[in-house]
Length: 356
Image (tube, rainbow, N blue to C red; front, side, top):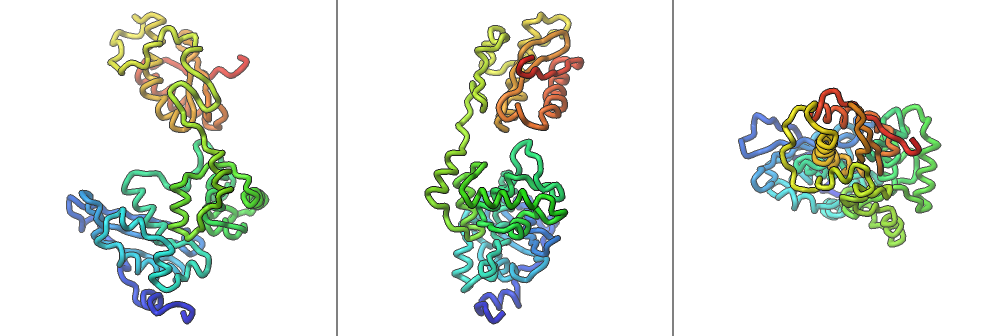
């Protein structure tokens, strides 16, 4: 402890706000958010509990628990003291540099480790606001590290945003490579291509800023930002999928459903067996357009209705869905099930591939 400031030593030996909170202590206008970060298996996990007033997002109380090494204790103790009474937005402005300055040198930054309590605060805020975790696999992406189910995109994000340069650092940050070591050659390849600026995924400017705030990572260089921006997908419109597919004008069904972009109205209530082919197509297309396409397009794909043959609904997939390994599951458990519920219970969905 001789290498650290008196303030760090004080918060390490006499931590403030150490402990847990219970929902039984909450009033109707308060909410308890618990965020767990790090990995208990490698001994650097931390839990942050926040009591928030929902009306103005004021942090009424903050507690932490540390599991493993003692490095995060001082930063967690100090941050909890700092954020009580602040709004969540103000608390999120606190950066690794701020803590390092206030405490006279953080143990984590000296050891090139992430500031777990800041990561936990960010995670708690996203949880409170219903936002997804920052580091998550792309839709439909298979894991590169099968032992810990970590995908290539999650690994690349960690390498670029945390400035990782070794397999050991990747394992410490993501757990990837910490099991059977079979993925180590793949991890080495990711490290090499990222060092050469050969990126595969787009990272938002917000996430770059978050990395600076949470881990003390230097801002990206202009050339790195340029390469990153080149990976940004163009904004999808209601007429174009990611693979360039334009709909619905070229569809053989388009003439029947050309009015599908109208304000959604209640479907024809007549029984299925009383509907004409045109009516059936229109009912199916309405469910696709209003119930299913919004979610599919969110993941960068699209679905096109080609034809209806008896009870067989023929469709084609486009954009990211076209090559997604979970496309069959999406069609059967998602599209087919929804059409059976909303249109006719005997419908079956079949994908038509190019050249068929």
